[in-house]
Image (cartoon, rainbow, N blue to C red; front, top):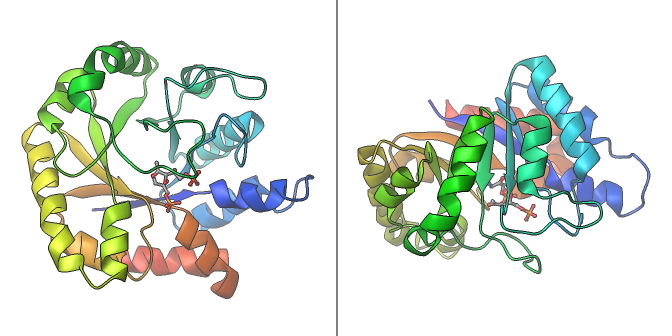
Length: 247
Ligand SMILES: CC(=O)[C@@H](O)[C@H](O)COP(=O)(O)O
Ligand SMILES: NCC(=O)COP(=O)(O)O
């Protein structure tokens, strides 16, 4: 079964554009969870452009209340700065069920690549161990063709396949060419004992074909498209549409 974790970054983008509390990210989380979403994801960035430290605490509390997964994403190497205590410190404070490590630089518009596990193994391994000691399941953001055996050796429980290139290929009519690399990487990950998550630019149009082609996807985290689509149909109805694609 594939579960849906709704990424609420874009609710915070809208809220921050005017300051204040609206739209309320906790109300959005409750709406998604009441509609059947299996968890909540956020990816607070060091520049606090969307979700902030206080959101992380509030969403940790609401996911605890619902008994669902809180998936916290971030770059463990980004240094702390005022308003952003650092990814590991956030994990120490709220102990998310899943910590997804993503190799973003500060200036990136959004996530656009996975780790180079061979290059990053020595720096990742102690951080993964620290997160595991907190009780977090650790997932590492990965490109197709990544050295997933090494990701397993680093201590991760899962990899999250970066689906941006798939979404782009789908939009251009080239999904059939893009999907085999995802399926191969998912199979290799399973063979290495890793669970497989997927995310980035998934939407109602491209999700079904991805899940049909890629085996054993345990979780998809979806935010940008889902929040955009919710403008037309409402958040709860949109979450239910995604759940019907997963079913
Ligand atoms: C890790 C990942 O794929 C990203 O999709 C991320 O969570 C989205 O971040 P932004 O909302 O900042 O683009
Ligand atoms: N990990 C991917 C995620 O949380 C959401 O990505 P997107 O749907 O906002 O592109």
